[in-house]
Image (cartoon, rainbow, N blue to C red; front, top):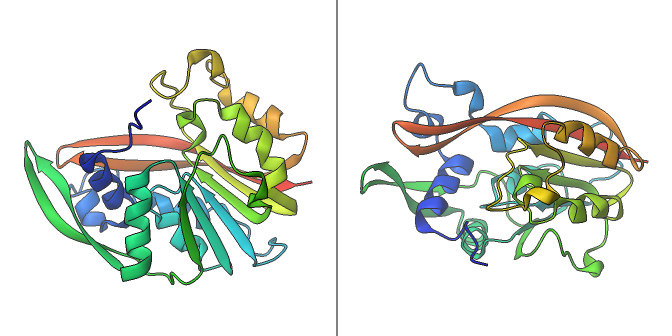
Length: 243
């Protein structure tokens, strides 16, 4: 099946989402500015710095073009970012190597604006790889923190990853998870959705046997499609401690 995330237009949208200046992402003063800086907030608004069992390793699943991976590198000695999109990972690798990446985002119709994505954090601690979150290699090991933002409702079978989290997070480690529960058959067969209106409860039940829920918040986010069209959503953000 063709990966829906492999398109130049979508690459530009996600580079803007992860690295764009606030005024580029939301050029309207009366727009939903509470949805800006989502990539950073998924890490820093949820992670418990004082509760970290170590600063060794973090895993960023569904890292897209790497914005959250670089944020995690502020706090860990090594961070592995994994995404199924080859174009996203190629862009993240270029940012890691060069520190910047020129790209275009849609203005209107067929008009595009040129800009530059720049990483502000160190890249020496970061590694990016193309991978399937539902079929991670056994040798990947375990981590002090696993971060998965807006991923589970874009997987063909989210239960495969949810059941794997206990192996991926060290005892005492943290799982940082956000999702807007935007179920679409384009990505996930309806029979494999976590629920029909009760996804939050089902997720908490599935994780509750091996994790303790320590924090839950609502995290709005905005993705610009063009200067007059935006996606505004509210993600359910959680932090779990592996027990």
